[in-house]
Image (tube, rainbow, N blue to C red):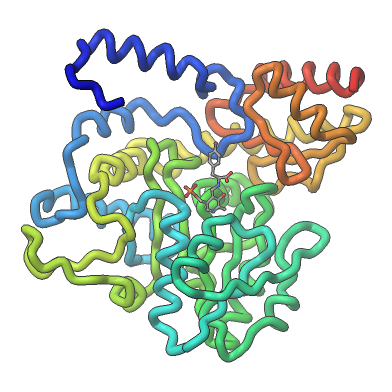
Length: 384
Ligand code: 0PR
């Protein structure tokens, strides 16, 4: 019911406190299956300070618009591109939708088709439905990366784009993007890389010596990349990123908004009014942490996931779905549903809906939390 009279601040805050006490919080160490984390304190400060900035009207907030451009530029650099075009958006979903929209709009195809791995995130289901693009699913290999030969077999005159994934949602697997890029160049079809999760992991992990295939704009067939600061980038929700290699892709999704303060303004994003503060926070975190800072975050996350995977392997009845590539470890057990239920009853924030339990070593996840989790898991497996 919409209240007739307002309550005091204290009353409102108290009611919220009670109602949100049901939420799991990141600092509890119980959230093990999420791709989000508690944002960096500097990013939180920035959100509060610049909460009123609206990138939907860039003529009003000229400084913020330039900062967004710089943030996009730095993300492009991280992804091996001198100059990129794009936006800080609401998340990986919007990034992926914009890429499919751009590919569809630059193509001249009546019945557009998109080829994507069976492991693709469900945001592409939304993209396909909203944009009238038929999704053509490519099979996976035994290691859960896309079967490039199957992708090739599915190319037709109607193919408007190919999707590769650098860090799949379920397993953190990285597709053979170099091979997909070759294919894309050979058939002259644009390749979009969904690095919503992997974008803030792979560049640092490679630098640390982990053997992960190239996935970024170094590969000439890659025309766009989704990279989310609100996952491993330590920035508050909402903060996604979409970077295009060429301006023509952004032009293809831009609509005029001429009455806005900037005059002759165009908008390419799905959202109109959108938070400037989050784009500023992306900029600030990159400036503050730098490559070295993110590398340390990724070093911990990667080392923790290797240790966790080796511990899991020692538990009878537990099977890793595959060796971890990034900081995601997924495993299955017998009677998985019963085990999931019991883990949840003990307060663990996990899910097993894909037929396995996915643990993401986000920055808030510590070894002590995982040790406690392993103890519970061993005990439950013995019982069930
Ligand atoms: N692409 C990939 C590879 C993803 O994993 C995700 C999200 C997206 C795109 C879409 O990103 P947005 O959710 O930012 O639009 N993957 C996470 C997942 O499904 C999202 C998530 C995050 C789920 C935190 C739960 C959670 O607690 O696992």
